Image (cartoon, rainbow over all chains, first blue to last red; front, side, top):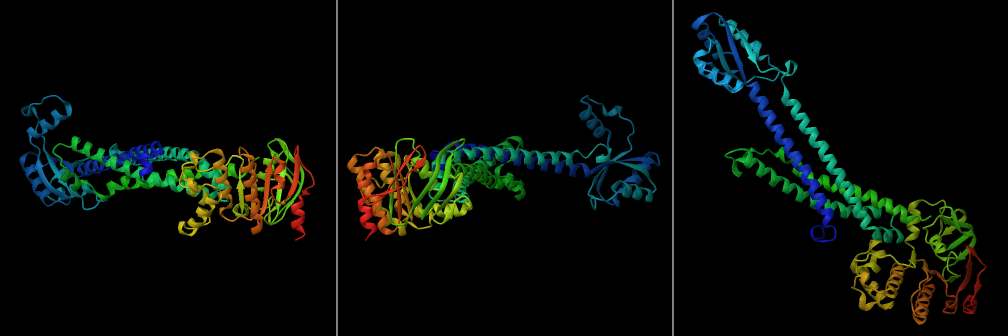
Length: 286
Length: 229
């Protein structure tokens, strides 16, 4: 650690630490995007609107409410008031809308807890309403086939984006560590002259680079955690360190754990390749 | 120990050594002498297994160089003590650590080699500089450190390329005598130098090299005397 922070390899150490920080930050950001997307998808799937088609009048609405009370997947049901509808429309259009100008909506908002992801929620509810003498349709969030389902694509993009970015950072670590081998060229020459094999020489330099990479990756990972905590505290009003601790899942910390390991492996591999090359040059003149 | 038969060697398109026939045996000292750019350094590169012969046959410490696997070459190199014209060290390391390097590479622990290495460093006159970083040593001191390192692992073959360069005549002769003493423990010694007066430092075979060609050896009188012992 001492040589990494204070010795001649300070530049390498901080290059590796920066790469690890960037990769871990990208990983943490991907996890945050994933969590938000999952939450969004869950809230989409947990809400639908029932439009009562028949019978007409308040009797139809009352019958529908009664049928929904025992319908599968439904956890709560409430008729949409004119005020609520006006508020939603105002939010969507940006224009103020007077509730008194709203028509008779005949809509019921329902909250859902689907029994299984494969369940035909809308079909089950329509059937339950029909059994109660109500003709209705369920307006659910659109699925992937009908233009919805953005969240899985966002999650995929975040995951693969983070992987590609981490890969680029690994290439930077790999290249930076080659510089270490160049600076250890005298050691390579000495070891070669004294009868070290290519793998012994390369291993010696790779070990040094891997240890530097491990410490640099730890530093980068810790910095990424600090940056992530600051961003979350600023982005989510009312959040405290205690609530953050409760929010964070073990899987969210995978990028932080992977940072030192990945940096050590990338740096070790880069130094090994370069040292092996230099050993080859020293071993065979002419 | 070393046998070269009709060997050519060189770098890139240029051939430096031509038709070499050479033999060095255990317990003998060989002096390769000749003018500058005659091929002495290339010759030592050939013997220290850093340069592949282009043709002919080269057997060094039992290894047929052209046919050998890299591991066999590395094994043979561990039995060669090499003193380069411009020795390469790990500059930030102390003299002691640099001299101990061959023993560390053989897997010895510090307590196993510490006494021997200190004795060796004292023997070459660097006792006071043992803990000094090599980058702080003078040219002559570096050469002594290189000699100490070359002897550390008790090699079977000792190669020295111009080991007396930059030294006073007295110091140079002392160094050659020191190297020559290694024949008594069964090592073969090959010294390349422009200075042919070194031939009277110890009994030895003297080979003259010029424009890449090696003459037949001459034995010094002392060597003759010892040969009959």
